Amino acid sequence: RYDLAEGSILPRVAGTLRAVAVSTQTDITTFAELNEATANGEINWGNQGPATTSAINAKALAALGGDEVFSVDNYLNNAVTTNGRGEEYTAVQRGDIQVMSGSYSSLLEFQQAGDIRFVLLYNNEESLPSEVGNSDCATFATSSIEIQNTDQIQAVSGGPFHRIFAGPPGLSDEIHSYWCDKITQAIQSDHYQEQAEEADRPITYGDCETAAEGVQQTIETYQNNTDLLREIGLIQE
Image (cartoon, rainbow, N blue to C red; front, side, top):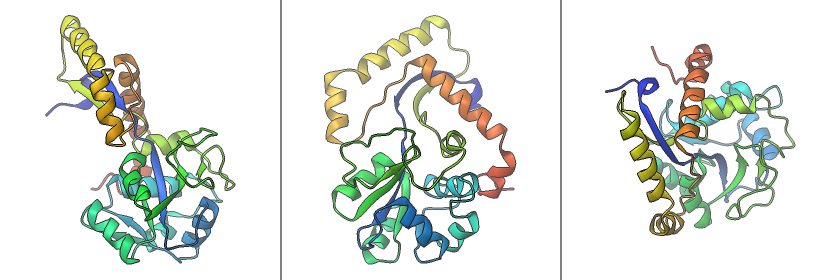
């Protein structure tokens, strides 16, 4: 109903750390091994459609990662489309798919069930979240395979600013300030924090200004990369 660029941006409840994980039925434990297996056509990547996060994550990595990373064609030749995350997970358990890509929090439950292991997180941190489990998991900062354009990959993949609150355009300063304060109080309440922890949904709070800057950065990234977005299927004409 509204142009996002004109919305009244309110706080961010969480960032959306992107991740790649492989089936524990494979012997793959590192991104380097996954990269080689993808380039050689030895494994299948699951997705829920060409413009979904699961596909865009992989295609952005392939298109922007540089010469050492598998190509978009490598990915497309190994891509298997399913009808939703549940069907994709079943395909992993069945052995039809060996790789899942998406938000870290959405994949975490499958990792905790013992069916997948993380091999790459889309951030520039040196350390890993405690829940990752696989000490061989890489980040953009620690990968033995050089990954280029990491900021652009993150932005095209949706960036860390996805889970925000927003209001319609033209909210008065008074109303905007009111909702910034109230949403912040809710996010920081003990009850909300406990619920997020129980659901394994990490909170990475950002105030109204931080959230607005993130939205603007994402919009500019999309505006400046229309050819790339067509190539990876996010813009379909």
